[in-house]
Image (cartoon, rainbow, N blue to C red; front, side, top):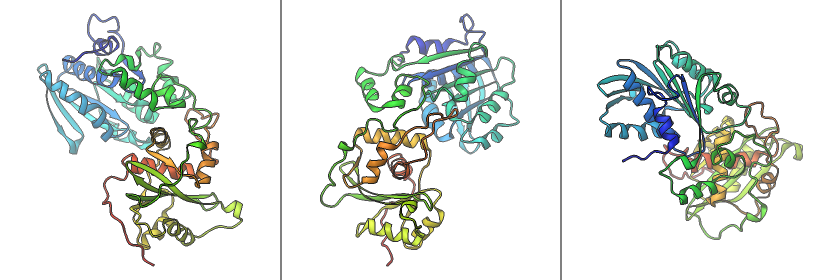
Length: 415
């Protein structure tokens, strides 16, 4: 039996005749992570569509189709099946056909990754749309999805975790919810009855700084100060002795800007930044060639068997030199904010540890700060960020799952 909190029940029933919010044309649920808003919104959306329409088309939108299937459909569809729903998914068409309450409707799945995504949704008419993690989508895509909902009785459904107070969605939807005839519900972890106090404490300990304020407290606050404000140089450790289980090298590549590389070794589930290479062409008053950087990388690796080089996505020429020398090169995942959050999480949990001797990485940890004015978006200051970028590349790609999908093996370097 599913148990819902008062706020979840409100999200589930706001559209029903007799509800004091029945005349609202949209619902917006924002707030903390793991607060139960996604499940309540997903169930409510499908129940509303099935109760009020037959033979209509609806849109379900996320930042990516994969994240939408993982975060929404995999949670909601089994529970709808328990209520008697029959559904089938045509993955090649990104189409879900669902039959419930004697009505059958079609739900089209879209990913709103970038500005070009709006082209995918043009020309179709919806009776309603659910936009999951709407703050991660570009404004053009969101507005195009809203414009598609022109069937009489159509409604809009939004949910998200907070970003900065300059974010366009906060300014144009959260602050103007009443003007837009939208019901806004702010969720906290206490609104999720499935979370125990122990799990709540775990999430409270998981985040720090701006991410704590947003993902735990559910606040739309400005990112400011040091990015890794919880970290101090005293947290660095001596490099472990002996062989590690696995090795990677991460690289942030620059010609005029500094180039930073980190050697990572894994032992007992912990990744250690064992040593590093850092070259600042301005400080040294000369530039290095791709071949010289490749030599430096091989010196950093020594005789170790490197699983892969996690390379700066913009370093195409350098990556090609490495491939010609026999190295396996993996293009780094480069979502900055997601990568920073994953890195902060890994550092706090002790899954990533910086070793003494990695002086440039430790130096940048103290100097890596948010821009004071993000112009509506969170931005880090583009100074003292090169070792920070190579560390972020490593965490996002290896610990964050981006290294999946390629064979893990070592390649003997050609001399």
